[in-house]
Image (tube, rainbow, N blue to C red; front, side):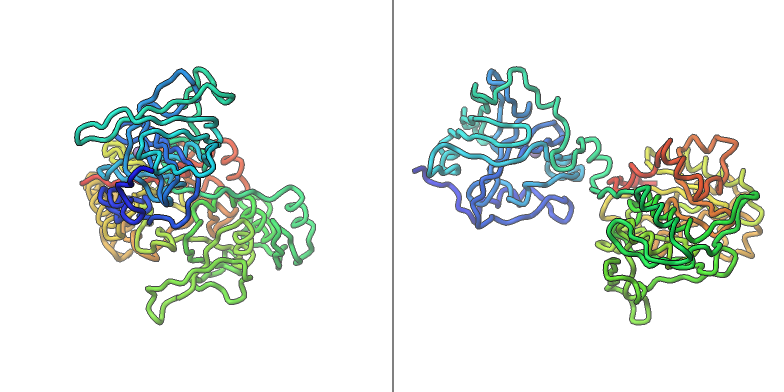
Amino acid sequence: MATRTSTRSDRLAAYRAKRDFEVTPEPAGRPSPEDGQRFVVQRHRASRLHYDLRLEADGVLISWAVPKGPTLDPKARRLAVHVEDHPVDYYDFEGVIPAGEYGGGDVIVWDWGTWSTDETSFDLAAAVEAGDVHVDLHGQKLAGRFVLVRRDDKDGGKEQWLLLHKDDDHAEPGWDPEEHPLSVKSGRTNDEVAAAPLELPTWEPPTDDELAALADLGREGTWTFQGRELRVTNLDKVLYPGRDGEPDVTKREVIAYHAAVAPWMLPYLHGRPVNLHRLPGGSEKKGFWQKAHPDHAPDWMARWRYEDADPDETQWYTVIDSPPALAWTANHGGAVEIHPWTSTAEHPHQPTWALIDLDPGEETDWDDVVVLAKLHRTALEHLDVSGAAKVTGKRGIQIWIPVADGYTFDDTRAWVERLSRMIGQTVPDLVSWEWEKARRKGRARLDYTQNAINKTLVVPFGARPASGAPVSVPIEWDELDDPDLRPDRWTIRTVLERLASVGDPLRSLIGRQQRLPEL
Ligand code: MN
């Protein structure tokens, strides 16, 4: 039996020494007391693309970096550089290691499964020490007998090994790992993970039968939607007058809309507390802000405790995390406006968006708003910053800019203020920096103050209290050049058709780890 150069407790020392766990999302991990026999291969686009092959043994993941990737081709001999042991928690790690950190780049779980051998009492860690490892892999892409052989010990450097596949039943001449680019964990490519490392669940819209059941209810009743029993009331009540001679919008229609738009709206609500602007009497009556999670909400509605709230502030907030929860909120709220927090419940002091609110004054006409939006478009393009414009459903335009984890609201507010003041200087007759509306002389305000905890803007696809139930809709930048663009162009009756044809240009920016450049 080979002598171990390391014991279970210190096997991860090299791993930890290379990483700052305040910065990287990788797990700090500890050696596991269990001896599992899993394997994982991660496709890692660091300074150079490579595949990390990891075999679970001795409470850790024994690891090699394989520049060209493992293959089923029995003729191939692949270089495999032996690297530091990783914690078993690394097994399903998929995400983005920040630039400048060790291994900075994107990682997907390219393949996973278990390993086995024919021997009854096989010690994999000892085989690695001896420089000769023969294992069968049972993955979704890789299968059959793989051999790892140590070639030499480079002076002071990392050990170079060879990785090959035996010519067995699973061998496939010419098999190329790059032709199998999807994550076995999420179905995503490295590009997709890099663009949005946040993994979002997917949500289903209501079925035709479910919508028909809602349509068939009387003035009130119990609607079964995705397994939830929803008590729905005042279904024929008019919440919004019709627009341009169209029929009025009833509460039944508003509930049906929120159920149907759930797959598009929930990505912006998921994991976040919400503030509701409720207009139970309809869009023409005065509304009120409700932050507190309602006492009578059903148990399956998620709620979140704001630990940092002052005693006289709201303690419990609603988190809308499913299509039935969204439908319940519509029934509860009336002509409701849903405003998610800019931060998540998990990290309430870290914004995920930097927000620019082009807030028109009484003298600002739509063309002025578009001019301001185009100036921001040019500035962001010049700065190479990704963001998307969103018409508000009322008179204005907002610009949503995704930011990396770790920013504070002070950071995003200061950055947006600096950007907006630079832009405002170019059109001084359009923009006022006065706080009080009366002193703005009807000019627009570039409102950076929304970048603060518990300050909110209306959710994408949220309805606004006006005739026809217009909705706030993210747009492509070049739609600013469309003479037919209006801030309230789409309503709850037309936006689903737009989504079906052009989709949501903001969606791919959700969770994007974007650093804001110095201004
Ligand atoms: Mn790597």
